Image 1 (tube, one colour):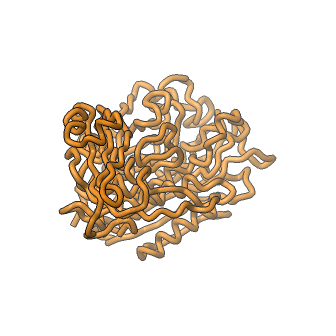
Image 2: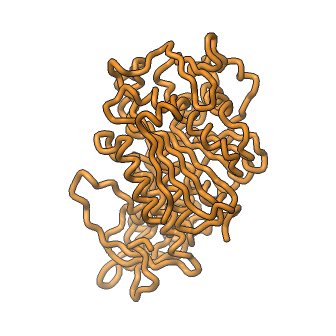
Image 3: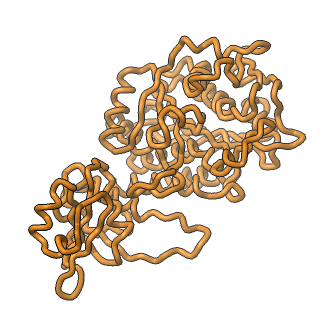
Length: 451
């Protein structure tokens, strides 16, 4: 269970959360709030004094409906033992406990950690183990994304997957060298320019007879853009380009920890997209694992290439559910921003279920269409496909259509184009790596495959 949770504690300080519309009544109840000018604006915190210390803490919620708003308590409170007091339903209970855990997250690998000693009494009826499972999965993904590329290359990403496999008794495999060139030629092509060897990482867990769920995560550990070199501004956060891999590993940890009734397979094409005399070039043509040939129109559209081989492998065994997660396109960010990653699927039931869980878990996503009218844009002039569509609009959709060419047998397929990053901090979500969609996907899988 998360280290900050306790089952009970005497003299725990109550935490109250107040909407802006209720500020007047709270000011009437507590003179200190009125005297301090408390208006319950979002993130406004008051420590109400009492005999010998803090009598209570009161947090303003503004007019927002952020289910993780109470993470602000964990971020701002002094050391002590606390319990939930009066809070709106939408951010109380289990959501409050999760917000507390996420609010305590800090990536401090490279600096002296700030020692904090905050404890929260678990609210009545809240499963602390389940909350901790979700929080730890999110934190695993955040840690992987936040780690700089000098310490997070393909080999280090493989090590992270290996440790996870060892912890939960899963099978681990890594393919590199000649075998990678033979069986995953697009992954090998993208990674051939780096001194850090590319590889295909595989983790398998669960009952072979259970429904098959396969997760594919883009693991581009650093993306320079290759010969289509990114500008300086574009490279600033490229350590997050393995965010898809981080998310599927965090999700896998949740799934295995909960012992869901499924056969889980995780595939991660792990590469570094570098510039060198050995790097792949614009106008190169490669034959994919599926047999389709791909003309390279842009070496900075490498994510769809490595995913294509991994998806073809995943699709070979016709899984019940195939999910890929990737920091794939700038077009997705232009369309829906950093807060609202788009997803794509032709499965209407899956789309509705995911949207429902995204809302319930405050893990937002938005469905975009697999618009078949753009299919011709990914057809190559001298190869079966091009990774640089002839249509310069709808880039998130044409990227999804490219990936869809490598999925035929899976009973249901879902593609998520995530940022893997928080650029505007919110309670429990600091600037840096983020496990977009992990909590919603876990809720979906738990509903479908829970024991």
